[in-house]
Amino acid sequence: MATTVHTVSAATRRFLEKPRPFLLDGEWVSTAGAHQHIAVDPATGAAIGSFFEAQPADLERAVVAARRSFDDGRWRLLTPARRQEILWRVGDLIANDAARLAELECLEGGRLFQPALRHEIPHAAETFRYYAGWCTKLDGRLFDPSVPGVDFHGYVRHMPVGVVGQIIPWNGALVAASWKLAPALAAGCSIILKPAELSTLAVLRLGELLLEAGVPPGVVNILPGRGRILGQMIATHCDIDKVAFTGSTAVGKQLLTAAQGNLKRLTLELGGKSPTLIFADADLSTAIPGAAGAIFSGAGQVCVAGSRIYAERSIFERVCTGLVDAAARLRVGPGLDSTSEMGPLISAAHRLSVHSLVLEGAKRSANVLTGGAPQEGSGFFYPPTVIACESADNPVLRDEVFGPVVTVMAFDGEDDAIRHANNSVYGLAASVWTQNLARAHRAAGAIRSGIVWVNSHGIPELSMPIGGMKQSGWGREHGIEGLMIYTEAKSVMMRL
Image (cartoon, helix red, strand yellow):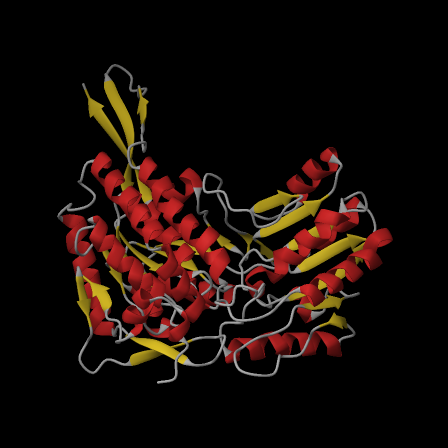
């Protein structure tokens, strides 16, 4: 098997030496006759390892295990302080294993090693620590019910929703897993987590750390496998109480249809086409690099990527020139190369999808200023691409590309900018670049998206909720809102 693992640590090489089993009821399982999925390095196209895919029968066993672990209270009935201690330890174990986790994310997910090591893995660790703190702070409310002639005492408790099916994407898989697992565990739920086929290995390593930290058997089950099979089963299974999904809007709609038969609770973090508004009074020395980073970071494979730039007409040419210059300076290469500033796309199929949208946009009069053609050689690289558009109906501006492709369009005044920003079926994120504080507040209030950054883009903050409006999803992650989606409010009225 051709590999690229000679560039990584001995610990990572050992992890990749044999097919990785999946986590079911506290045991590492490799089902007899199960298909082995070959993990591929998107920077080279070479195989780096493999893992066993769970089958429908395995999912049934996982549901039984998760339900049993929830009903017998081995996790939800632990004291909040004990759950806090375990989740905090998960964070510590992630931090201690940061190098191996970052290498796995680079090898399979195409991430850049240094940003993964310095930012993404620490963020995953901090997510578990943040929600560890919530274990002891999830309180309720007291009431004096208004019942004539009778004394009642009333209170509201927040109860864990039960067994949760979680489906995460391939981009930043470890961070995505932490965003799902940590709040659900803090709430007291039991979980079946399905990682994406294209990026599973780091999540399986996380499963080892969860057990090492003391999460009881059956509370977290990690089942990689085919999304169209396991995802459908998770959505329709009557003994799974809730589904939390991050992925495309199209798949989110399919899950919604699948779940309607049993009215399963859903949290959906879906697609985006996030606008970046650059006003003439913005500090262009920070706005242009910031806008470039908002789209080219992660090769544009980021849910909140700033893929639609609107620049005030008087600075439109300067913004276009600045973006082209930024793209030209960007060094594209393998994530394990410390000089790389942008890595590959996740797969050959995804690169074809990205390029198809660029070609379609060019056919409809979009002007490709730089990039726009797959790079030659091994791996699934695509160059940073800047496209000037005149029509809001151009598919490269309208549709989610999920690659290092940004459109630039001119606007005339604040109202026109807001109109363009809101002219989308998506509403996940946005950014506004201006030195006018009043305008910043007006724009932030008027843009229909779940989060708006001002003079920045994509900065994560665990205490602040993030999620989509319109077709970008239902529900919020992060903050107390990210915890409450895994709870049910229960009212109790007691006659005195």
